[in-house]
Amino acid sequence: MVLNIIVTCVVGMFGTALLLAVMSFLGISIELFFFLIHGMIFAMCVLIYINLKGK
Image (tube, rainbow, N blue to C red):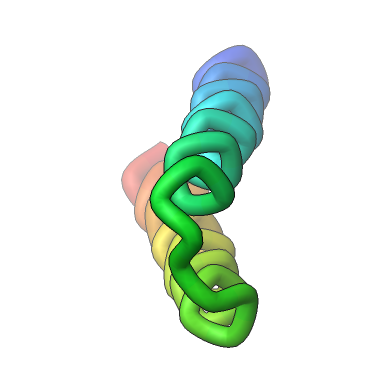
């Protein structure tokens, strides 16, 4: 259960780092990136909430 949350956070951080590298390579604006980051954080919080509720 706790391992599931840790894995989700690690995958999210790795995905975020990969996304940042791709976006800086493509020259996409930072504002859009922060908007996506907030969306990813919200999605991770929802996933954790569902995991806790399903326990």
